[in-house]
Length: 171
Image (cartoon, rainbow, N blue to C red; front, side, top):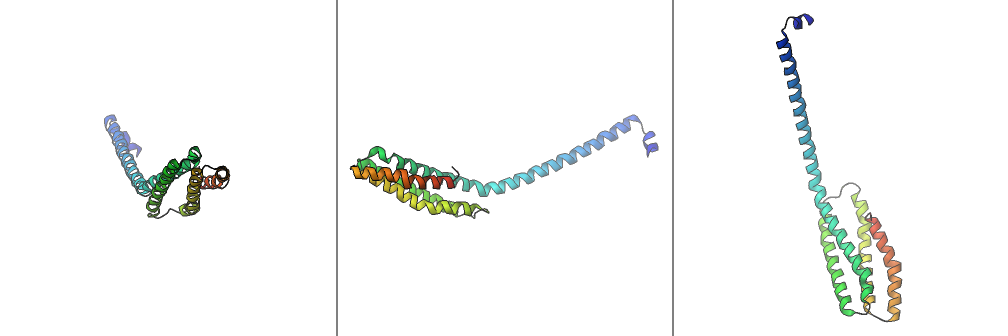
C-alpha cells in the first residue's frame, strides 16, 4: 500500500485527503442533523402533553393563591357586610374557576407518579375552600365573640390546612 501512495503526485495525495475529510464532514453533519431532528421530535411530543397541563396547573395555583389572599384579608373588613359579600362572591368565583381548570387538567392522562401527587391536594381542596368561606362569613359579623372565633379559625385550622395544601403543591 505504501508503494501505491509513493507513486502518486503531491497534488493527488492532497486532493485525496481533502476529499476524504469532506466525505467525513458530510457524514458527521448528516448524523448531527438527524440527531437534532430526532431530539426536536421527542421534545415536541413531550411539550404537547406537558405544556397544556403546566398551564392548567399554573391557573389552578393562581386561583388557590387568590382565595388564600381573600381569606387572609377578610379580617380587614370586619363588620362590613358589603365587603364580606364581595369577598365571598370572589372566593366562590375563584373556586368555580379552579374547578374548571381542575377538570381540564384531569382530562389528560397522568404521567407516572403524577396522580399520587395530585390526589392529596385535590382531596384537601374542598375542605380548605369551605374554611375560607367560613372565615369570610365570620369576619362579616362584628361582635367580640365572632372576632375571637375568627382569630381562632384563622390562626388554627385555616392556617394549618392552608400550609398543608400549599406544601402539597411544593410551596
